[in-house]
Structures are given as structure tokens and as C-alpha cells.
Length: 248
Image (cartoon, rainbow, N blue to C red; front, side, top):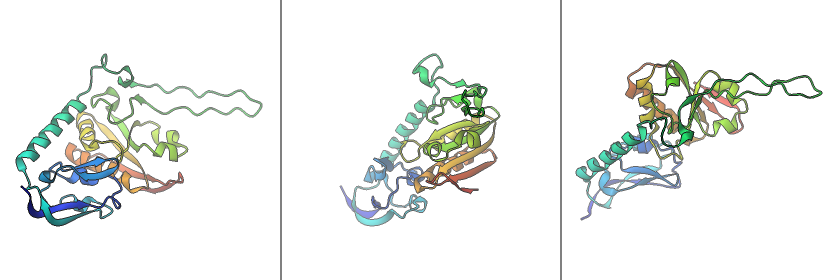
């Protein structure tokens, strides 16, 4: 039975799909659907608006209207299901089982290859990828290459926007990639598990200038707080024209 109460409202035109509101909602009432934040159940929303301060575009407001009453029991059941799903997702698969393409392995750098031509010899670019897999969702939290490593947490698009990505950013780092707008996961959980299980020397966050990339920075900050460790970190922002706009 619906009652008149306070509940959030989302303006899809203003929503940029950054996902910051999803991680801010302690009741699990929000999800990203087709790149937009959605209220998945009125009964999950307590109307207190914890998600409002996190929204960078002002897409979320609180209104008073008829809605299903807040159901704390349903919220707890929903969060329990989510927690179970995360546990299953974050459990690293046996190296000998599952998809062979996701098995963790260290990659040894190759020596530069000199191309034959009539012009002066030039060394062909060499990949600086030091491990596989590199998708954050796929890496095992206890992979040996994490020990005493410097991490590069890069938004997917940065590798295409910045021309010298390998040499300037991946070199001597363990590279993890993801898209906070398109990947339907909370990166902070996986990152916190990696930081807690390994000795990490530093973290470089490589993001694009677009607002939705703010979710990547938020995830790393949250993971650092959850891990309880003091690890040096920095944010480098890449412009859509391929330039470095800011380092902080």
C-alpha cells in the first residue's frame, strides 16, 4: 500500500552515468541501467538522500509523492544477495580451471626489435604490459605480481586517447583497467581486497576529463579507506584531445 513520503527522483537528462550515487546508497536502491542511474525499488529508498551530495550534475533530488513504504527487511535481503554475489565474483578461480584466457600470469618484457629499412634503424615500440589479465574484474586479488608493485588504475579510454600510454604510464607498473560508466560493479570492493592482501607501493589513477571517470577516482579513494593502508597515490587527467590536462 502506497503512502505519501519523501523519496528520490532522478533526472535522466542530467545523469551522466558516473555511478557515484550507486556506491553512496547504503540501501542498494540504485543501479546503473543502460548508462543511467535508476531507482530499482521504491521500498529500498529511505528518502534520506545520502546519494545527493555525490551527484556531480545535480540529477538527483528529493520529492514528496505517493510511493511504496520503506522496507528495511527487503533492503537487508537485497544487500545480503549483493554481498553473496560479490563474494562469488571476488573469489579467484583455480588457475587450472575456468577460461584459460583469464589465468593469472606474469609477462616478461621483450627486447626492442629493430626494423629493417633504408632509413636509420629505429626500435619498434615494446609493450609494457607486465601481467595478464589486466581487466580489474578478472584479476585474482592474490596474484603474485601484486606484491611490492606500483599500480596503474586506468580508465579504458585513456589507452586510446593518450599516444604514449605504454612508455609514460604502464612502464614498471601493474596495469588494471576498467570503465566506471559501463561496468556494473563496485570497483572499490575488489581494489580494497587487492590492497589488503598485498604490499602495494603506489597507485596512479589515469582518467579521462569526462565526468563519468570520476567514479574511478572515487573507487580508489574508497578502497584506500577500506584497506586502512597509507599508500601514495596520484590522479592524472587526460583530455579528449590526448593531452595531459592535470596531475594531482
